[in-house]
Image (cartoon, rainbow, N blue to C red):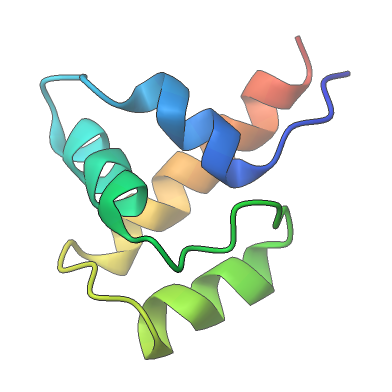
Length: 73
């Protein structure tokens, strides 16, 4: 099992030509994004209350699920 933060996963998603890729790009551009965080609730709270990310939270939910699957391999 991999030991990477959500931010590290988002870097791998950047460049995709879909909404998840756009979300990852906004994560990358957010200089205050918690780069070492893995916890869903902490990330969700940050995105909802402190970030300028404009894409729907449902995209984050889907991307976080993909992150959990990615960690397994």
